[in-house]
Length: 177
Image 1 (cartoon, rainbow, N blue to C red):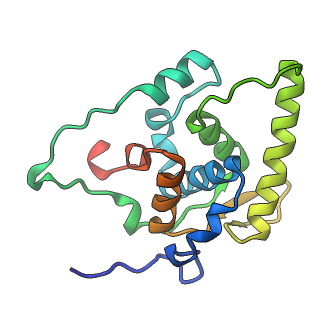
Image 2 (tube, helix red, strand yellow):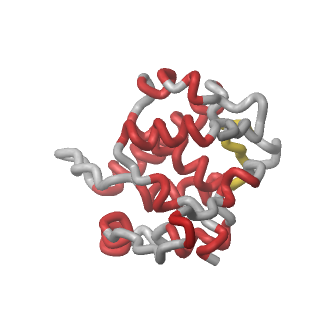
């Protein structure tokens, strides 16, 4: 059995896994979202992620187990390992993030508008921190930034296990076309 190498020699590997333990909860899901945005083709987003912020749609998507037909030999072909991470927009990152993040109980005493503003501020701050820590790399200097994910598959699998997120249910597979 051969060991597969990371697609980028500079990506954060599972050997740095303890680094994620000190990250805030939202930052962990931002890294997972970034990984999904980088390795899943954009055309698959409507299949794997909620297409709107409607709570009912998001809840249905999160709680629904995806049934996949069995494959000969019992193995599925994940295209993730054969692709280089693709750049993604902040909009796509946030869309994926909001569709996979578990519902958080509402804060007492805050209006929905206050909570949304606070969440946007917190998330933007965490994105900038993840960039500084090199979990994310800015791929351009335009006014509409594109980012690249800088973690390997094993790292994000360990991180997903840490937060109880079923990563494999959301990874694009060649046989899902």
